[in-house]
Amino acid sequence: MMKTLYKFLFGTLRGRLIVGVALVHAVMMALFIGDLSIRQRAMLLNRQVEEATALSQTLAISAAGWIAADDIAGLQELVESQRRYPEILFVILTDEQGRVLADTDNSRQGLYMLDLPHETSLTLLSRTPAVVDVATPAMIGVRKVGWARVGIGQKEAGKKLAEITRSGVVYALAAILTGSVIAWFMGRLTTRRLYAVQETIGRIRAGDHLARSQLTGDDEAAVLASEFNSMLDALAERDANLRTSQEALYKREGELKEAQRLAHIGSWDWDALNDTIWWSEEYYRIYGFDPQQPPPNYAEHQKAYTHESAERLDVVVKRTMETGEPYEVDLELAQPIPGTKWIVARGEAKRNANGKIWGLRGTAQNITERKGAEETLHLQAVELEDEVAERQMAQENLQEKALLLEEEVEKRQKVQDDLEKLNESLEQRVGERTAELAAKNLELQKMNRLFVGRELRMVELKERIKELEKEKNRLQT
Image: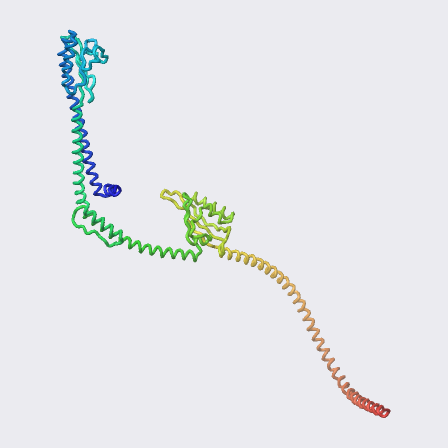
């Protein structure tokens, strides 16, 4: 209940208006009553001083002869006669030395008063609401014979003043309550049209983005509703543009992620002041980290490289943080994952409005295949250099052999020439020898025919001898 009331009074425009009017009434009435009370108290105190002064002067005049005559009884009757005043606190009559001759308190008779004024004139010893103390010298002619001292309080007047103050408080509370009720009605009339705008806000919060305020007129509420409707239209247009931009942004982010994936390029952003870093998905993939986990800080990230690569990276990063010069450096991973061993890191400085460097941003590209190709090309280049050297040596050998071959060819040409000459001589001799052999061959043919006839006859004889031997053997058996 109290929470609801507090929310209404201090959380709504109507409640604040009521509280404001009530506070204004309270302050104004409090000031009025306070001022009135102060004036009344001052007036009563002045009146109290006047009465005490008048009474002390009257007593001083009346008691002067009796003081000079030392008529104690007469002085006491005079003092007792003053009790009819309701506010009297004390009445004292003393001689010139301050000895109490008569007092409303008989116990003080004969005592001496030490606080009487030194000057022979009317003196106000105390001026407070509790007591006004006035001392007046008793004179006979120009001679002082004693003192008349009167003390008056404000008991009854104070009661009346307190009653007046209480009545003022009651009237103030009534005025505050009346002002609050009037403020409530005024607040209701003032805020009723504003609540129509609030109702439109509630409908929009509930999901009805086409809701608009229908207030008409030229007052502030109507102007506010019109401006509110214009703002809603502008917001609706901005939301439409924002959705279009977001869709385009999501599309570009997807294209960027795909491009980074295909190109094996990851991006990063480092806040050096807070030592926080952001990695793209491809950057996580290159280093083999879990994208669901936050990226490590700079010191932890250096552990991903070999010692030599980490030192080179630290040097270029510090130089860029100091000078703003961008860097590009090839780095080797300490624990490579399949397909990733070498990367090329590029970075540049980020500056604030004052030109001070507060971080870095850059990319990392997987160049393992390129490094492998470079190593292959290097090996091939070495092999090619070796092969070229071998071929040069072979060429030099061939040149030497060619020289030897030329010499051999010259020698063989010379031999061939000699052979041709020898061949001509041999052909001539062969021709002559062939003619001789042909003549001898005819002679051999003739002799051969003779020898062949004899041989045939020898064969026939051998066969006849074999037959005769066979016949002989048969006959013998």
